[in-house]
Length: 456
Image (tube, rainbow, N blue to C red; front, side, top):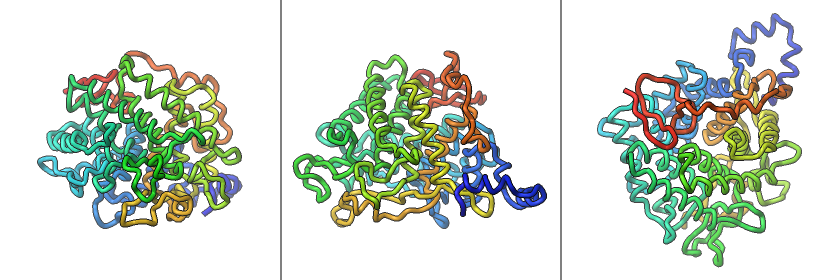
């Protein structure tokens, strides 16, 4: 299973007849102009039903992992209009949401922020295909957040079983949905939700920031009593890359929603710039991507795909939206090329895979002392291919590259002229809830400058 860059050099030397035979038998590279389409098609080939994503081949799964990947796939569909992909993503809400808004596999009383995240995809799908069934499910998820237990300074607990704990992961799982759903579910009262979201993300910044490394720790325990927490600060030991990835992607999605004239928007923009500036300092010089544990220099550390995809996406989109200065464009392109070289491989059947994905890392609970937040713990977790937590951000990063003119064939050679043109956007354009151009459906809900517009 050769790395893609090596494969292309060999592939171009194949005789024409052999090349044509190879393309006839599988989805050869020439079939796909864009990595986003190729990766989405590869996932559809590996997992025929979207409700079985995230390594759940026998049971439909309501999980944040599936939600993140389908969010990315939905953007590929909205960009390129592949009807098979459209049917694939539609299968998830059709299967997982029942009459009356019941959600298969969801437990309200767990107060688990992770289980809110699929609602972000559900909300975006509802935008284009509104129904009472989906609306009831969205209200159920919003109700959980409105009743979610909080720390004394107002930040949601990560889960009921992680009482009084704030994780960077949870900021991404809950706040983007909370912010995006506010103008749809609570039209006219959006401001209070926006203020709450900004309060939570800035408080999390203050609680988890480490001045010495200029990074953010994975989590903070309000009691300072958890076995993984520093008894003086309540902080976990290290800055885990994917936790940082969740944190900065949450800022991107919140900025997509907050109105341009919202008076506290600048607080999120400033925090995003601060975080991305720090992360750029930890970008590996040779490969252009990032290590699994950011604040540890150890030969056992490894270059990790999911976090690298998240940081790459945030660099590229942050530059495009004008939230980051010019040099982040170059760093983002370098990071994306690094991902192709380090992580993307072509398989014998013509699909591609995203390799070197950390499967999972967490802290506690009390009955799982192995998850102590040590470096040894983080690197002990399994590494696997095609983790949904990496596929979604890879699709987003790929779409950012593709809107600038990068393709499968020119990824290492293209040097676009007038690249600043991708920043120019006419003021009359209407966007969906994640800041992407509305496709002009005859019915649906859009958000323009933080306000709901309904088309019937």
